[in-house]
Image 1 (cartoon, rainbow, N blue to C red):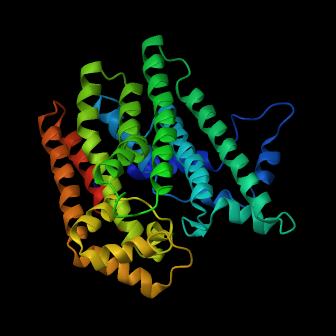
Image 2: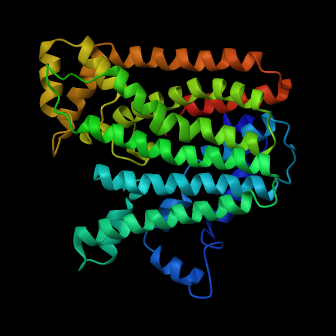
Image 3: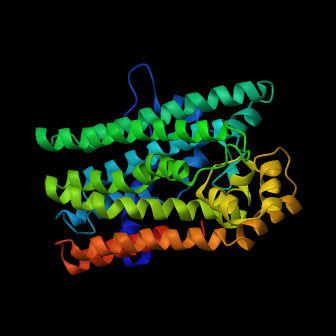
Length: 360
């Protein structure tokens, strides 16, 4: 678990301090931090919450590649972790607009916060302001990336830049795949596809949530191309396991723990692996119920409970949990073969466990 990573709290503290000043590298003679703080007044709480898994992932890549292990965390690593957390915040702001989500991290989503802060503006104002705020967060992420790589040699700068740009492109493509899948009606002729759901996981979340943070932290420490390949092999199945767990929480998780309504992915009509496997494993009556209610508006708690019962009763939840553990075990086997010190392996193992064995 995260507690087994000795400097995880120092990473969170250092990144948290920077997130209290997200715009410090974005200002000019014409634009002050106060102006951007005023813009963000109703939404800044969304940025200050979060588990900081991506920042810790960058640290994991750093130590796996021989980066210094000291309570004095290098500024470049903290800046990089802050960049990843700001990019994540930007992505979820835009994701919540697409999904029409009302709650994020236990708070009103950005578009709801902006709408209620200016009631005369209405939903259109809320969505438009949230799009712009997501863009501002992306600019802030880029500013911290520039700070993190300042003074690096050209080889490391190129490696980091390529990983960062690739992450942005993959999130956009994965989001499109997710959106496209949800645009298709559930029917017997067009059933939910496990393969399509896994492709969304690989592009949209596994890469930018787990794989790229580890690789970009490793590249910052000067990892060799061979080590980067091995770390990618380790982190890819781990990233898939992470998202399979996330999707389980999106169906069964408690709002008190996840910060999102229970059954949120059902209401949003997400084409998850859980849905695809339940469709395969349930009976005709179950499929008819899923077809009628998955993603339908104004779902009641009894309907959500019935859908959860179909997923559990058909054996789909257990089957996906087994798939998750298979990916976690695959990651562990690759980790066992990595040529890194035992204490570093233990921290990589603890990180993997924290990603999968969580309730939020």
